[in-house]
Image (cartoon, rainbow, N blue to C red):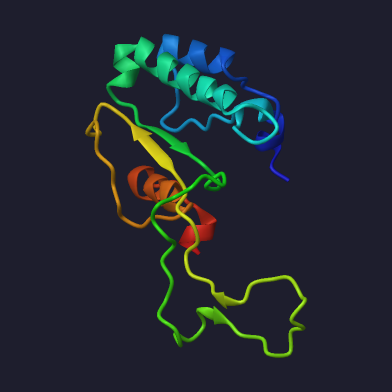
Length: 164
């Protein structure tokens, strides 16, 4: 167990402490904002509740020009949410070793993956910052560890799952 992590398990709070830290200019180099469950855009809550949480973070950051001038807001989703995507997931060419699940002994009625594994559906991420270009859509392939790799390279934060 990590005593420091345990001590902070129920604080600081969002949005109150976050907004106060922005106003005072005391945000650390990296802040993780985890909205309350009802504001995560997961069912059964309306998506607008999650949008309100993102708005609250953005509004707080931009309310202090000194803080905003050196900020980057990453809004990362953990899944695509089941929304339609006009771009099909990339798959490896047929016959690529290790990229296809082939289990001939699996009964035909069994559930599970058959065929290509690939990268899966795209997952949205927004990067909002005075350093980013408005109206730009990046089409490079990233994964859910990309923000962690950014933190590791930019701030020297050791991320054991990436650094090992």
